[in-house]
Length: 260
Ligand SMILES: Cc1ncc(C[n+]2csc(CCOP(=O)(O)OP(=O)(O)O)c2C)c(N)n1
Ligand code: SF4
Ligand SMILES: [Mg+2]
Figure 1 (cartoon, rainbow, N blue to C red):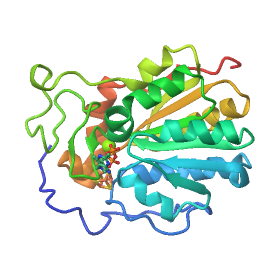
Figure 2 (tube, protein in one colour):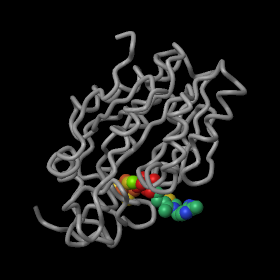
Figure 3 (cartoon, rainbow, N blue to C red):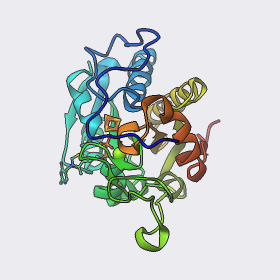
């Protein structure tokens, strides 16, 4: 696979096949062509609408490229300090148990800056749904290595690929959270293929249904393409995702709903 220059993101999509914007998305996103995060935004908004939750949803968004979604999501959202979304979500849900509360966080936000927040919220069995957009880089600040960067993955701070002896091992947050008693649902999806997008959407729906049933903490990790941070072209993103991240983070339900 060729390494391409990523001094600046590509200016146009290499191929746009159709209009996929859901009604709850108020405008075009401003993320790079080939980015996986807008795909998750789409299935999240579609799910909220399909479940009839629009009028009683409150989202808590962290800091990362997805942070710009707060301007185009037609549901109530607040943006909190880096990594602290599970704590904010805790307060909201406890004060307003009638709402559907979710967080939208990146790997840098959740697994670096806010690692203890997500683990404590899970162990407290907070009845909220956390959505992790895992691309293995701090995308927004230039593509530095995060705790979830997989061994061999290139980042701006590990140009030859992450090495265990120098950088340590990746943290599989969803697998860790799935072990905790307070947890109602944990799953890991990926949006590199059409089938993966459909399965990810089902996981997000399951997580909200679990929250509505009061089953405890929910986490859906989604592996997302970051061609700009990975030094690949937009069309190469899904293959790189499958060859790198999916090998370390197997897809599927890590903690199915108790009722299923
Ligand atoms: C307390 C604090 N530390 C650092 C930053 C800088 N910062 C903003 S976004 C970001 C990267 C977030 O990475 P990630 O959550 O993985 O999202 P991505 O950009 O990859 O989608 C960082 C480090 C900040 N805003 N606040
Ligand atoms: S830097 Fe990566 S995560 Fe950020 S918008 Fe571009 S492709 Fe998406
Ligand atoms: Mg990231």
